[in-house]
Image (cartoon, rainbow, N blue to C red; front, side):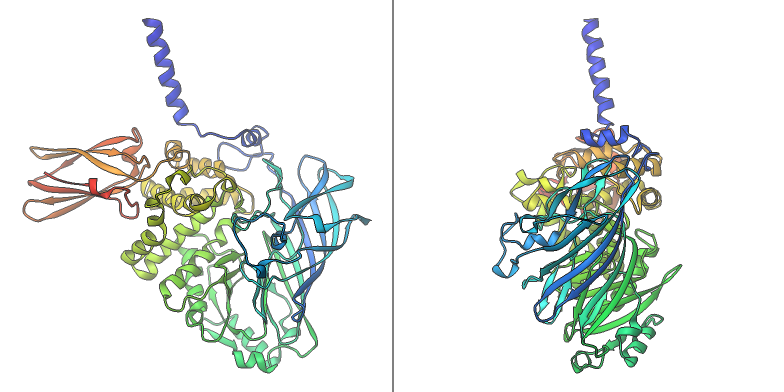
Length: 621
């Protein structure tokens, strides 16, 4: 008997310890063992990441719709490993008929993809048959790229813009969104080696922090908007429009740089057959641009703590929501900088282009016009610009861990929405647009743990994990820690990892250290389970001046909630309970509430945390 009890005690103890540990896949454990990451949440003493310096010359033919270019990449292998091969990524091969995709596409989406004309490494030519390439391919090196050394890669290429526009392509016959437009070296990192995950058009992207210099050759009368600093406006704009552009750089008020009529009249750009527009951006994860010969062009700027930021919009004449975009963006850049996440917008510009994607890029967004619902239109802009922080500032691997960027953008969209639309409207939008479609989803088999690698989840499961469940976890943690401590911990995480490549365990460990609390119970509850939201009042009792409420956590998630007590005399009292009530036992809790009057009824209200079966959240006494 003693041996049995001793063994039982050991099992219970081990289970308690295990409950405080977070599962890691073997490759992640190895990164920690190698010292590239640390349990404190900071990068490890042996952390490294590779980098490319890209000088790109690209030309867009407005007639043939062909994008052609040549680039020189100086690629630094900062890893401790010698590299026998390079992985080259070209996302737009997604348009090739034989490319695997997450869903059906029309004929207008399809194209011939990338055609590599020339490929050299350190002056040595390689014979590349790009006809057989997918969205990422390896090139075997003739000479090893040694650890702590550099290689010079030169590539010449071309590809056609797809007729159907989504994240990139032809918005109309005279307006193009040119993204993912150049072959790049894929990420080689400390926990997975070469990133060889193909792009399927569902999961998003993962890129190194690189330096980009772009010279974009466009036909006359086409205005170009792009990532980075605009280096040569004097060379491409006619005097009146150059003056308006420069005025916008110091103006709080919106300047209409060019109307549709002015764009079509040939007055805006220099009247060379081709104009070369130059842009530069450093330590950034991607570069894209757009061009049009008829879009309206608005601009202004906003003064932040350390810099003034240019804010621009290009859109079709008559897009009523886009007429407000510059003012909306001025507001949200300032709000995000001062409130949540409370980190100054890190770049010098932000431009919105009317397209068909609702998609983010560094310093650029490509949004659908929603002229009949300004709240939705504005929150779309808020969401895409919030991505500045997650993934771009933080270098998130969106392909594997979409919840590390989409979840945060969804959270920031909600928080700024409170300020813009009022708390009631913001909550209603968040619940209807985000939470309801998940909590009422009948196909709950798709509902996998958030920690599941994003490429392994499809359908509703991908959206639920990436957006709503992740966002609710961040809001629940904010409630648990309180605003001040949550922001302190969040800033600790962001300070540790901005400009680098964090993974979920870096977030978990940084928040533990930054808050001074062991939050592993919370992360286990939210990220490693098939939980959902479903509370139930199991029993109630009123004795003397105490009300006892037994609450079963049927769904399992550690959520905050309000208890609304209605008294016999008609008075109503609301008490808030944070996720701390679930810290010791995530299956049930007993609330003991001092009262002075007879209680008539009780209701549990999760607010944003919508309950799967709300009918058992109320009880009459």
